Image (cartoon, rainbow, N blue to C red; front, side, top):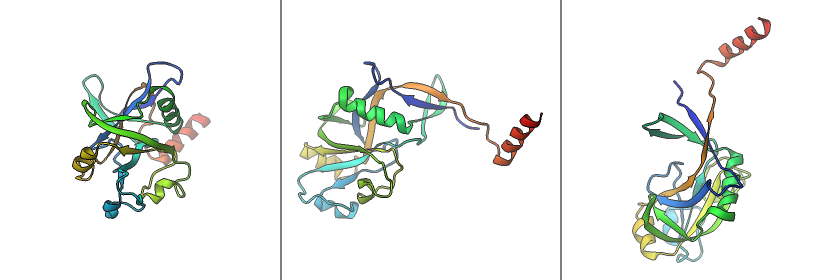
Length: 200
C-alpha cells in the first residue's frame, strides 16, 4: 500500500511561507552527506580549498521529488517531497526575504546557534557537468546546493571534523498539496484498464 504523498509548496508573495534557516544536522532528511572543503580532510573530498582555514561545508539542501518519510498523530505515516519548480521558488524567496544567511543551528535546536555564513548556493542544471560533480556528489537536476563558511572554529573542530554534523536540513513553513497516487498495479494491467475504458 502506498503512503499518502504531499507536495510542499510556498507562496512567492506572502509573508508566511518559505525557508527560514538551514540547520546543520547529524541525520539529514535528504540522506546526503556534506563535503568538507579543508585541506586536512583530503580523504573526504575530491576538490580541496587551497586555504585550510576557510572551513567551508557544502551539501544538498533540497533534492527534487525525493520521498521524505514523516509520521504524526493526525495523519499517521506519509511522505513529503519538493518539485523542481518549488525548489527554485523556495531558494529565491530565501535569499530575497525569508532567509537568515549569517546564522544556522545544530539539529534544529533554536538555542544551539552556529555562527556561519552562507557564501554560495546554486541549483544543479546539468547533473553530469555541475560543480557538485567535482565535489563528489551524484545528484539530480534541480537539487539546491549550499556552501557555508563556518566562522566558529570550535564548532568546526568539535562537530564538523568529528562527523557529528553530516549535512544540511531546512527549516520553513510550507503549504501542502496532496498528490493523487495511482493504485499499485503493473503497467500491462493499467494499459488494459485504459483500453477497456476506451472500448467500453
